[in-house]
Image (tube, rainbow, N blue to C red; front, side, top):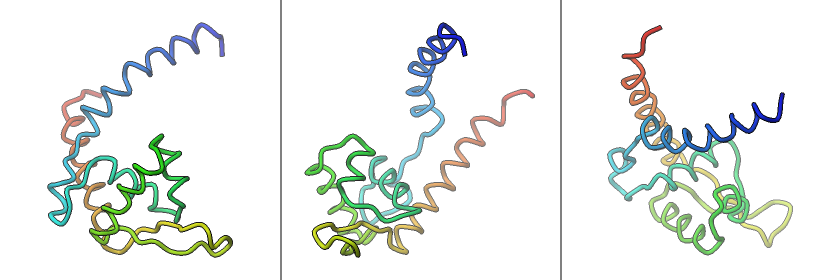
Length: 127
């Protein structure tokens, strides 16, 4: 791909991604779970854990959040029984975080609500 075209695509993405996030991916997680006030970051963490268990440091790196801040967020999710800590099988110094059944259920509800929001916004578009 030509360098000018690539630069133009990157520039456009920088402007459009925040709009997509704010307008199309709009969801209020607190409507779904009354146990804890879930923020978008909480839901993002749970989504990250949907397919695999990860150590706190890896989750923090994915979200560009400091490890102490991520520990606070994980503690909130543990207290709400959305995730749980498990010892790492290969290295006992590491604690992995995994999604609980309750967390899977809440995440599934968030995904359904998000898909419905997207459908409502896109239904008016012409072919």
